[in-house]
Image 1 (cartoon, rainbow, N blue to C red):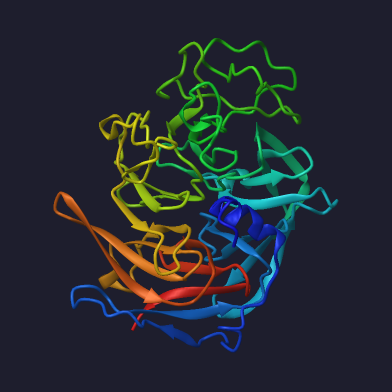
Image 2 (image 1 turned 30 degrees about the vertical axis):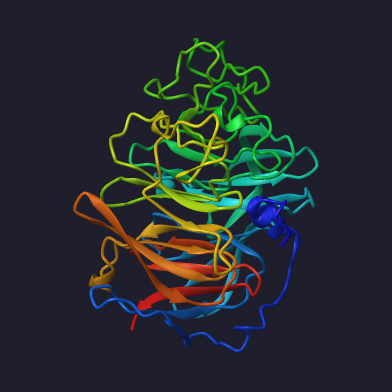
Length: 421
């Protein structure tokens, strides 16, 4: 793929391509892809078991915290599918493009109170307006396997300069707040330096409170409570829904700062995840041309971290004349654009019961090569190991309600479960 589009559009442009993977097209549910990488004895030997090969352009993997055991897969064409254990046939949950709106769906997250409120959130690119949108939807009250596309309630809009590097992830943290990844939204090397600009929402991870529904005509917000950014009038986007900014956000109430910002200095944070056991946050940030990185934030952090983009790409300076690495939080792991690697795909920590040898390992991979690595703490340091070489065009790595890990191949529509051999 052309290097001038992000792995930028390496991940946004995925939405415009539908190609069948010849490499693995012969695999059927239950077959495996085994590791060709030599792993040290103290790392597990893993393989992949095919769950389905019938989802067009999958982009995200999620689960509803309702005890149903269902796996949900979002696709860039706007459809969200349900998979049940042992059934390779996906069933459509909702199509947010039911009126051909041109949405490119990148992320999906279910409310922690899903059993009570039936709400879930999506992250998509609205192509006609070149804006990133976060919206809320509801499941049908009398049918848990179907949601209503007409229930859409917009939460947030973020305009981009070039419809590139949109980010894509959203997830609820242990604190109950919704975290949202937004890329720098610009051409290569972020020419507007938006990722370092605390006055807008580009190149950031945001944290907002979506638990309160306000009247259709809410009273004026107190300073620092709702966004005061001039081009983002976030006060009631319809259906009487809006959000609050947690007062503990690092820049809340600071003039000239977007109060939604939780962390910044990111290029294209396509995926992030919380460790369900510890609450630690892992952010996988897609690089420009030299480095792919994993940024880390311990549970209980006060936020406000600056991960360096566009000044830094991983641990490398993009401008050696005006670069002081000590000003930025370095990644805990990175890898180079060598051997065909191009774009990092995160990523979850295994917290299941089926494979004790996987416990505590954070899984991530590369979109172009299909390599899958594991990362874990070794005392005060981190260690990584290549665990599997697949040849898949990875789009997402996610988990189910039981903590098992799954990977999605964008081009073939295949979803696999990670297993121990």
